[in-house]
Image 1 (cartoon, rainbow, N blue to C red):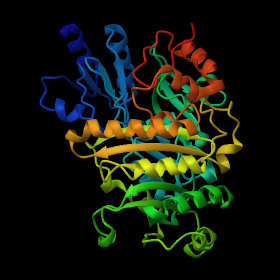
Image 2 (spheres, rainbow, N blue to C red; image 1 turned 90 degrees about the horizontal axis):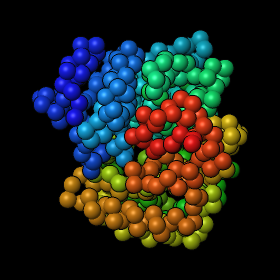
Image 3 (cartoon, one colour; image 1 turned 180 degrees about the vertical axis):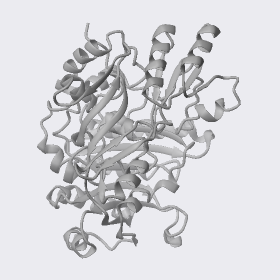
Image 4 (tube, rainbow, N blue to C red; image 1 turned 120 degrees about the vertical axis):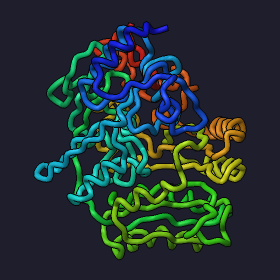
Length: 461
Protein backbone atom coordinates (compact mmCIF):
# COMPACT_ATOMS: atom_id res chain seq x y z
CA UNK A 1 0.00 0.00 0.00
CA UNK A 2 1.42 3.39 -0.99
CA UNK A 3 1.32 6.16 1.58
CA UNK A 4 -1.33 8.70 0.50
CA UNK A 5 0.97 11.53 1.63
CA UNK A 6 3.58 10.36 -0.87
CA UNK A 7 0.97 10.40 -3.63
CA UNK A 8 -0.10 13.89 -2.56
CA UNK A 9 3.52 15.06 -2.70
CA UNK A 10 3.88 13.45 -6.12
CA UNK A 11 0.81 15.31 -7.38
CA UNK A 12 2.33 18.59 -6.22
CA UNK A 13 5.62 17.95 -8.04
CA UNK A 14 3.94 16.67 -11.20
CA UNK A 15 2.84 19.01 -13.99
CA UNK A 16 0.63 16.52 -15.84
CA UNK A 17 -2.43 14.65 -14.62
CA UNK A 18 -2.27 12.02 -11.86
CA UNK A 19 -5.14 9.53 -12.02
CA UNK A 20 -6.17 7.18 -9.20
CA UNK A 21 -8.87 4.47 -8.97
CA UNK A 22 -11.46 6.80 -7.42
CA UNK A 23 -11.14 9.40 -10.19
CA UNK A 24 -13.98 9.60 -12.73
CA UNK A 25 -11.56 9.28 -15.67
CA UNK A 26 -9.78 6.20 -14.26
CA UNK A 27 -11.52 3.48 -16.29
CA UNK A 28 -11.26 5.45 -19.52
CA UNK A 29 -7.59 6.29 -19.02
CA UNK A 30 -6.49 2.80 -17.97
CA UNK A 31 -8.27 1.03 -20.88
CA UNK A 32 -5.86 -0.86 -23.12
CA UNK A 33 -5.80 -1.44 -26.87
CA UNK A 34 -6.23 -5.17 -26.25
CA UNK A 35 -9.68 -5.60 -24.72
CA UNK A 36 -8.73 -9.10 -23.54
CA UNK A 37 -6.53 -7.54 -20.85
CA UNK A 38 -7.92 -5.62 -17.88
CA UNK A 39 -5.31 -4.15 -15.52
CA UNK A 40 -5.82 -1.75 -12.65
CA UNK A 41 -2.82 0.44 -11.82
CA UNK A 42 -2.63 2.08 -8.39
CA UNK A 43 -1.44 5.34 -9.97
CA UNK A 44 -1.45 6.59 -13.55
CA UNK A 45 1.00 9.44 -14.22
CA UNK A 46 0.05 11.22 -17.46
CA UNK A 47 3.29 13.01 -18.33
CA UNK A 48 3.41 16.20 -20.39
CA UNK A 49 7.17 16.75 -20.49
CA UNK A 50 10.56 15.24 -19.64
CA UNK A 51 10.50 16.69 -16.12
CA UNK A 52 7.29 14.76 -15.48
CA UNK A 53 8.93 11.55 -16.66
CA UNK A 54 11.87 12.09 -14.32
CA UNK A 55 9.50 12.84 -11.44
CA UNK A 56 7.40 9.75 -12.16
CA UNK A 57 10.42 7.43 -12.39
CA UNK A 58 11.68 8.75 -9.06
CA UNK A 59 8.24 8.22 -7.48
CA UNK A 60 8.09 4.63 -8.73
CA UNK A 61 11.63 3.89 -7.59
CA UNK A 62 11.11 5.38 -4.11
CA UNK A 63 7.72 3.77 -3.45
CA UNK A 64 8.65 0.36 -4.84
CA UNK A 65 5.64 0.30 -7.15
CA UNK A 66 6.14 -1.85 -10.24
CA UNK A 67 6.43 0.47 -13.26
CA UNK A 68 4.83 0.05 -16.68
CA UNK A 69 5.46 2.48 -19.55
CA UNK A 70 2.73 3.40 -22.02
CA UNK A 71 3.62 5.23 -25.21
CA UNK A 72 1.09 5.24 -28.04
CA UNK A 73 -0.92 2.58 -26.20
CA UNK A 74 -0.89 -0.21 -28.81
CA UNK A 75 0.96 -2.91 -26.85
CA UNK A 76 -0.62 -6.31 -27.62
CA UNK A 77 0.21 -8.21 -24.42
CA UNK A 78 -0.85 -5.31 -22.22
CA UNK A 79 2.62 -4.64 -20.87
CA UNK A 80 1.94 -0.90 -20.96
CA UNK A 81 0.01 -1.30 -17.71
CA UNK A 82 0.41 -3.12 -14.42
CA UNK A 83 -1.93 -4.17 -11.61
CA UNK A 84 -1.43 -2.24 -8.36
CA UNK A 85 1.55 -0.40 -9.81
CA UNK A 86 2.51 2.82 -11.55
CA UNK A 87 1.65 3.40 -15.18
CA UNK A 88 3.87 6.12 -16.61
CA UNK A 89 1.63 7.29 -19.45
CA UNK A 90 3.47 9.16 -22.21
CA UNK A 91 0.50 9.38 -24.58
CA UNK A 92 0.16 13.15 -24.05
CA UNK A 93 3.73 13.76 -25.24
CA UNK A 94 3.06 14.08 -28.96
CA UNK A 95 5.50 16.69 -30.23
CA UNK A 96 7.05 16.19 -33.68
CA UNK A 97 9.67 18.33 -35.43
CA UNK A 98 10.60 17.69 -39.07
CA UNK A 99 13.95 19.11 -40.19
CA UNK A 100 13.63 19.41 -43.94
CA UNK A 101 17.30 20.36 -44.41
CA UNK A 102 18.61 17.17 -42.80
CA UNK A 103 15.63 14.91 -43.59
CA UNK A 104 15.31 13.98 -39.94
CA UNK A 105 12.29 13.80 -37.66
CA UNK A 106 12.32 14.21 -33.87
CA UNK A 107 9.36 12.45 -32.26
CA UNK A 108 8.04 12.32 -28.70
CA UNK A 109 7.02 8.91 -27.32
CA UNK A 110 3.24 9.41 -27.19
CA UNK A 111 2.99 9.65 -30.97
CA UNK A 112 1.37 7.03 -33.11
CA UNK A 113 2.53 5.86 -36.51
CA UNK A 114 -0.22 8.05 -37.99
CA UNK A 115 1.07 11.14 -36.18
CA UNK A 116 4.55 10.62 -37.61
CA UNK A 117 3.22 9.86 -41.10
CA UNK A 118 1.03 12.98 -41.08
CA UNK A 119 3.83 15.30 -40.00
CA UNK A 120 6.51 13.93 -42.32
CA UNK A 121 4.18 13.55 -45.32
CA UNK A 122 3.73 17.32 -45.53
CA UNK A 123 7.46 17.55 -46.33
CA UNK A 124 7.44 14.68 -48.81
CA UNK A 125 9.19 12.37 -46.33
CA UNK A 126 8.49 9.13 -44.47
CA UNK A 127 10.07 7.27 -41.57
CA UNK A 128 10.23 3.50 -42.25
CA UNK A 129 7.95 1.97 -39.64
CA UNK A 130 4.72 -0.03 -39.32
CA UNK A 131 1.59 -0.62 -41.42
CA UNK A 132 -1.23 0.44 -39.07
CA UNK A 133 -1.50 4.13 -38.19
CA UNK A 134 -2.72 3.55 -34.61
CA UNK A 135 0.51 1.74 -33.68
CA UNK A 136 2.57 3.58 -31.06
CA UNK A 137 5.86 4.66 -32.60
CA UNK A 138 7.85 4.19 -29.36
CA UNK A 139 7.03 0.54 -28.76
CA UNK A 140 7.29 -0.27 -32.45
CA UNK A 141 10.74 1.33 -32.63
CA UNK A 142 12.15 -0.26 -29.48
CA UNK A 143 11.08 -3.69 -30.76
CA UNK A 144 12.54 -3.21 -34.26
CA UNK A 145 9.86 -1.89 -36.62
CA UNK A 146 8.84 -3.45 -39.95
CA UNK A 147 6.59 -2.14 -42.72
CA UNK A 148 6.23 -1.37 -46.42
CA UNK A 149 9.57 0.49 -46.58
CA UNK A 150 11.63 -2.14 -44.73
CA UNK A 151 13.05 -3.90 -47.79
CA UNK A 152 14.21 -0.58 -49.20
CA UNK A 153 15.39 1.29 -46.10
CA UNK A 154 15.65 -1.27 -43.30
CA UNK A 155 13.96 -1.64 -39.94
CA UNK A 156 12.81 1.40 -38.00
CA UNK A 157 15.81 0.95 -35.70
CA UNK A 158 18.11 1.05 -38.74
CA UNK A 159 16.83 4.59 -39.27
CA UNK A 160 17.09 5.68 -35.63
CA UNK A 161 19.82 8.28 -35.16
CA UNK A 162 19.53 8.99 -31.44
CA UNK A 163 17.26 8.84 -28.42
CA UNK A 164 16.86 10.82 -25.20
CA UNK A 165 16.36 8.55 -22.20
CA UNK A 166 15.43 8.86 -18.53
CA UNK A 167 17.33 6.12 -16.71
CA UNK A 168 16.33 4.11 -13.66
CA UNK A 169 18.49 6.27 -11.37
CA UNK A 170 16.81 9.44 -12.65
CA UNK A 171 19.56 10.65 -14.97
CA UNK A 172 18.65 12.10 -18.37
CA UNK A 173 21.01 11.02 -21.15
CA UNK A 174 21.28 11.08 -24.91
CA UNK A 175 22.18 7.86 -26.70
CA UNK A 176 23.64 7.72 -30.20
CA UNK A 177 26.66 6.25 -31.98
CA UNK A 178 29.04 8.51 -30.01
CA UNK A 179 27.28 9.13 -26.67
CA UNK A 180 26.28 6.16 -24.54
CA UNK A 181 26.79 3.96 -27.59
CA UNK A 182 26.16 0.75 -25.65
CA UNK A 183 22.74 2.05 -24.58
CA UNK A 184 21.97 3.12 -28.15
CA UNK A 185 22.88 -0.37 -29.35
CA UNK A 186 20.54 -1.95 -26.78
CA UNK A 187 17.61 0.37 -27.51
CA UNK A 188 17.58 -0.79 -31.12
CA UNK A 189 15.52 -3.91 -30.56
CA UNK A 190 15.89 -4.47 -26.82
CA UNK A 191 12.49 -3.03 -25.94
CA UNK A 192 11.75 -0.84 -22.93
CA UNK A 193 14.27 -2.56 -20.68
CA UNK A 194 16.82 0.23 -20.31
CA UNK A 195 14.94 3.42 -19.52
CA UNK A 196 12.09 5.68 -20.61
CA UNK A 197 12.75 7.15 -24.04
CA UNK A 198 11.44 10.72 -24.19
CA UNK A 199 12.32 11.44 -27.82
CA UNK A 200 13.51 9.64 -30.92
CA UNK A 201 15.36 11.13 -33.88
CA UNK A 202 14.83 9.29 -37.17
CA UNK A 203 16.31 9.46 -40.62
CA UNK A 204 13.46 10.06 -43.09
CA UNK A 205 13.32 9.28 -46.81
CA UNK A 206 11.64 10.84 -49.84
CA UNK A 207 8.05 9.56 -50.04
CA UNK A 208 4.83 11.19 -51.14
CA UNK A 209 2.69 8.88 -53.26
CA UNK A 210 3.06 5.22 -54.10
CA UNK A 211 1.37 2.33 -55.84
CA UNK A 212 -0.12 -0.16 -53.43
CA UNK A 213 -3.02 -1.94 -51.83
CA UNK A 214 -4.31 -5.51 -51.38
CA UNK A 215 -4.95 -8.27 -53.91
CA UNK A 216 -7.15 -11.19 -52.80
CA UNK A 217 -7.46 -14.82 -53.96
CA UNK A 218 -9.78 -17.57 -52.77
CA UNK A 219 -8.43 -19.88 -50.09
CA UNK A 220 -8.27 -22.78 -52.56
CA UNK A 221 -5.46 -20.88 -54.27
CA UNK A 222 -3.59 -20.12 -51.02
CA UNK A 223 -0.92 -22.79 -51.50
CA UNK A 224 -0.04 -21.50 -54.95
CA UNK A 225 -0.08 -17.86 -53.85
CA UNK A 226 2.12 -18.44 -50.81
CA UNK A 227 4.64 -20.53 -52.73
CA UNK A 228 4.95 -18.03 -55.56
CA UNK A 229 5.24 -15.18 -53.07
CA UNK A 230 7.91 -17.07 -51.10
CA UNK A 231 9.97 -17.77 -54.21
CA UNK A 232 9.70 -14.31 -55.77
CA UNK A 233 9.61 -11.67 -53.02
CA UNK A 234 13.37 -11.71 -52.49
CA UNK A 235 13.93 -11.21 -56.22
CA UNK A 236 11.69 -8.16 -56.58
CA UNK A 237 13.23 -4.66 -56.41
CA UNK A 238 13.50 -3.48 -52.81
CA UNK A 239 11.24 -0.53 -53.69
CA UNK A 240 8.46 -3.15 -53.56
CA UNK A 241 7.28 -3.88 -50.05
CA UNK A 242 4.81 -6.77 -49.95
CA UNK A 243 3.56 -9.16 -47.29
CA UNK A 244 1.30 -12.20 -47.56
CA UNK A 245 -1.70 -12.79 -45.33
CA UNK A 246 -4.33 -15.45 -44.61
CA UNK A 247 -7.60 -13.71 -43.72
CA UNK A 248 -11.37 -13.54 -44.07
CA UNK A 249 -12.81 -11.16 -46.65
CA UNK A 250 -14.37 -8.28 -44.66
CA UNK A 251 -18.14 -8.05 -44.98
CA UNK A 252 -18.14 -4.33 -45.77
CA UNK A 253 -17.76 -2.13 -48.84
CA UNK A 254 -15.64 -1.79 -50.94
CA UNK A 255 -14.97 -5.54 -50.68
CA UNK A 256 -17.08 -7.50 -53.23
CA UNK A 257 -20.27 -8.68 -51.55
CA UNK A 258 -20.25 -12.09 -53.22
CA UNK A 259 -17.01 -12.86 -51.36
CA UNK A 260 -17.88 -11.46 -47.92
CA UNK A 261 -16.81 -13.73 -45.04
CA UNK A 262 -14.90 -16.08 -47.33
CA UNK A 263 -11.51 -17.35 -46.22
CA UNK A 264 -8.94 -15.72 -48.50
CA UNK A 265 -5.25 -15.23 -49.10
CA UNK A 266 -3.95 -11.75 -49.81
CA UNK A 267 -0.76 -10.03 -50.83
CA UNK A 268 -0.61 -6.40 -49.69
CA UNK A 269 1.75 -4.19 -51.69
CA UNK A 270 3.46 -0.85 -51.40
CA UNK A 271 5.70 0.20 -54.30
CA UNK A 272 7.78 3.38 -54.11
CA UNK A 273 7.15 4.61 -57.63
CA UNK A 274 4.48 5.42 -60.23
CA UNK A 275 1.64 3.00 -60.90
CA UNK A 276 2.83 1.89 -64.34
CA UNK A 277 6.24 1.05 -62.94
CA UNK A 278 4.75 -0.82 -59.99
CA UNK A 279 2.43 -2.80 -62.23
CA UNK A 280 5.38 -3.81 -64.40
CA UNK A 281 7.28 -5.04 -61.34
CA UNK A 282 4.26 -7.04 -60.18
CA UNK A 283 3.47 -8.51 -63.58
CA UNK A 284 5.71 -11.61 -63.37
CA UNK A 285 4.30 -12.49 -59.95
CA UNK A 286 0.68 -12.04 -61.01
CA UNK A 287 1.25 -13.93 -64.28
CA UNK A 288 2.31 -16.94 -62.20
CA UNK A 289 -0.92 -16.89 -60.16
CA UNK A 290 -4.64 -17.59 -60.73
CA UNK A 291 -6.96 -14.68 -61.38
CA UNK A 292 -7.65 -12.79 -58.12
CA UNK A 293 -11.16 -12.20 -56.79
CA UNK A 294 -10.29 -8.59 -55.92
CA UNK A 295 -7.54 -6.18 -56.90
CA UNK A 296 -7.62 -3.20 -54.58
CA UNK A 297 -4.37 -1.60 -55.69
CA UNK A 298 -3.97 1.93 -56.95
CA UNK A 299 -1.82 5.04 -56.85
CA UNK A 300 -2.32 6.82 -53.53
CA UNK A 301 -0.66 8.97 -50.88
CA UNK A 302 1.61 6.99 -48.58
CA UNK A 303 -0.57 8.05 -45.64
CA UNK A 304 -3.62 6.47 -47.31
CA UNK A 305 -1.91 3.09 -47.58
CA UNK A 306 -0.83 3.38 -43.95
CA UNK A 307 -4.42 3.88 -42.76
CA UNK A 308 -6.06 1.39 -45.11
CA UNK A 309 -6.81 -1.25 -42.47
CA UNK A 310 -7.40 1.01 -39.44
CA UNK A 311 -11.22 0.66 -39.50
CA UNK A 312 -10.88 -3.12 -39.19
CA UNK A 313 -8.74 -2.88 -36.03
CA UNK A 314 -10.35 -0.49 -33.53
CA UNK A 315 -9.23 -0.21 -29.92
CA UNK A 316 -10.85 -2.64 -27.49
CA UNK A 317 -10.94 -5.79 -29.62
CA UNK A 318 -9.99 -9.15 -28.10
CA UNK A 319 -6.44 -9.99 -29.20
CA UNK A 320 -4.18 -12.98 -28.76
CA UNK A 321 -1.12 -13.19 -30.95
CA UNK A 322 1.92 -15.39 -31.37
CA UNK A 323 5.00 -14.75 -33.47
CA UNK A 324 8.07 -16.43 -34.89
CA UNK A 325 10.98 -15.62 -37.13
CA UNK A 326 11.06 -17.81 -40.24
CA UNK A 327 14.24 -18.77 -42.06
CA UNK A 328 12.71 -21.16 -44.61
CA UNK A 329 9.01 -21.19 -45.48
CA UNK A 330 8.70 -24.83 -46.53
CA UNK A 331 5.83 -26.36 -48.46
CA UNK A 332 4.84 -28.33 -45.35
CA UNK A 333 4.80 -25.16 -43.27
CA UNK A 334 2.59 -23.46 -45.86
CA UNK A 335 0.16 -26.39 -45.76
CA UNK A 336 0.03 -26.14 -41.96
CA UNK A 337 -0.69 -22.42 -42.13
CA UNK A 338 -3.54 -22.97 -44.56
CA UNK A 339 -5.03 -25.77 -42.46
CA UNK A 340 -5.25 -23.67 -39.30
CA UNK A 341 -6.14 -20.39 -40.99
CA UNK A 342 -9.06 -22.17 -42.66
CA UNK A 343 -10.36 -23.05 -39.18
CA UNK A 344 -10.07 -19.59 -37.63
CA UNK A 345 -12.84 -18.91 -35.08
CA UNK A 346 -13.52 -15.30 -36.09
CA UNK A 347 -13.54 -13.22 -39.30
CA UNK A 348 -10.97 -10.86 -37.78
CA UNK A 349 -8.33 -13.57 -37.25
CA UNK A 350 -5.29 -13.32 -39.50
CA UNK A 351 -1.81 -14.54 -40.27
CA UNK A 352 0.82 -12.26 -41.79
CA UNK A 353 4.30 -13.05 -43.07
CA UNK A 354 6.43 -9.93 -43.48
CA UNK A 355 9.62 -10.14 -45.55
CA UNK A 356 13.00 -9.68 -43.88
CA UNK A 357 15.49 -9.10 -46.66
CA UNK A 358 16.93 -6.27 -48.75
CA UNK A 359 18.27 -3.48 -46.56
CA UNK A 360 17.70 -5.51 -43.36
CA UNK A 361 20.28 -8.07 -44.46
CA UNK A 362 22.89 -5.37 -45.07
CA UNK A 363 23.16 -4.76 -41.31
CA UNK A 364 25.20 -7.25 -39.27
CA UNK A 365 23.41 -9.16 -36.52
CA UNK A 366 25.75 -7.72 -33.89
CA UNK A 367 25.28 -4.09 -34.95
CA UNK A 368 21.96 -3.75 -33.12
CA UNK A 369 20.23 -5.67 -30.34
CA UNK A 370 17.78 -6.95 -32.99
CA UNK A 371 19.85 -9.96 -33.98
CA UNK A 372 17.80 -12.01 -36.44
CA UNK A 373 19.23 -10.57 -39.64
CA UNK A 374 19.38 -14.01 -41.26
CA UNK A 375 15.61 -14.61 -41.12
CA UNK A 376 13.52 -14.33 -44.28
CA UNK A 377 10.13 -13.64 -42.73
CA UNK A 378 8.57 -12.23 -39.58
CA UNK A 379 5.40 -14.21 -38.82
CA UNK A 380 2.44 -13.23 -36.68
CA UNK A 381 -0.70 -15.26 -35.91
CA UNK A 382 -3.37 -12.91 -34.55
CA UNK A 383 -6.58 -14.28 -33.02
CA UNK A 384 -9.03 -11.35 -32.94
CA UNK A 385 -12.71 -10.78 -32.21
CA UNK A 386 -14.91 -8.06 -30.77
CA UNK A 387 -16.66 -10.26 -28.20
CA UNK A 388 -15.12 -11.05 -24.78
CA UNK A 389 -17.05 -14.34 -24.88
CA UNK A 390 -14.66 -15.52 -27.63
CA UNK A 391 -11.49 -14.96 -25.60
CA UNK A 392 -10.95 -18.60 -24.62
CA UNK A 393 -11.62 -19.84 -28.15
CA UNK A 394 -9.23 -17.27 -29.61
CA UNK A 395 -6.44 -18.34 -27.27
CA UNK A 396 -7.05 -22.03 -27.93
CA UNK A 397 -6.90 -21.56 -31.70
CA UNK A 398 -3.90 -19.23 -31.59
CA UNK A 399 -1.86 -21.52 -29.35
CA UNK A 400 -2.70 -24.68 -31.31
CA UNK A 401 -1.88 -22.98 -34.60
CA UNK A 402 1.45 -21.70 -33.26
CA UNK A 403 2.39 -25.08 -31.75
CA UNK A 404 1.75 -26.75 -35.10
CA UNK A 405 3.77 -24.30 -37.20
CA UNK A 406 6.56 -23.45 -34.72
CA UNK A 407 8.66 -26.57 -35.47
CA UNK A 408 9.24 -25.15 -38.97
CA UNK A 409 10.45 -21.81 -37.60
CA UNK A 410 13.36 -20.29 -35.71
CA UNK A 411 13.53 -20.29 -31.92
CA UNK A 412 12.79 -16.64 -31.28
CA UNK A 413 10.23 -14.07 -32.37
CA UNK A 414 9.76 -10.36 -32.94
CA UNK A 415 9.23 -9.04 -29.40
CA UNK A 416 6.30 -6.87 -30.50
CA UNK A 417 4.45 -10.07 -31.50
CA UNK A 418 4.99 -11.89 -28.20
CA UNK A 419 2.39 -12.20 -25.44
CA UNK A 420 3.21 -12.00 -21.75
CA UNK A 421 3.07 -15.79 -21.43
CA UNK A 422 6.41 -16.24 -23.21
CA UNK A 423 9.16 -17.74 -21.05
CA UNK A 424 12.76 -16.62 -20.53
CA UNK A 425 13.97 -19.18 -23.04
CA UNK A 426 11.99 -17.49 -25.80
CA UNK A 427 13.45 -14.09 -24.92
CA UNK A 428 16.98 -15.50 -24.98
CA UNK A 429 16.33 -17.27 -28.30
CA UNK A 430 14.98 -14.03 -29.76
CA UNK A 431 18.23 -12.18 -29.11
CA UNK A 432 20.53 -15.14 -29.74
CA UNK A 433 24.22 -14.15 -29.61
CA UNK A 434 23.28 -10.63 -28.48
CA UNK A 435 21.47 -11.76 -25.33
CA UNK A 436 24.51 -11.86 -23.02
CA UNK A 437 25.59 -8.38 -24.10
CA UNK A 438 22.06 -7.11 -23.46
CA UNK A 439 22.14 -8.46 -19.89
CA UNK A 440 25.41 -6.56 -19.34
CA UNK A 441 23.93 -3.32 -20.67
CA UNK A 442 20.88 -3.91 -18.45
CA UNK A 443 23.16 -4.36 -15.45
CA UNK A 444 24.89 -1.05 -16.23
CA UNK A 445 21.78 1.09 -16.77
CA UNK A 446 19.09 -0.71 -14.72
CA UNK A 447 20.89 -3.01 -12.25
CA UNK A 448 17.82 -3.48 -10.02
CA UNK A 449 15.51 -4.25 -12.97
CA UNK A 450 13.23 -1.30 -12.23
CA UNK A 451 11.91 -1.53 -15.81
CA UNK A 452 10.71 -5.12 -15.79
CA UNK A 453 7.09 -4.90 -16.98
CA UNK A 454 8.07 -5.78 -20.55
CA UNK A 455 9.60 -8.66 -22.48
CA UNK A 456 12.18 -8.63 -19.75
CA UNK A 457 15.93 -8.90 -20.06
CA UNK A 458 17.29 -9.44 -16.58
CA UNK A 459 20.53 -7.82 -15.47
CA UNK A 460 23.64 -9.99 -15.66
CA UNK A 461 24.56 -11.54 -12.31
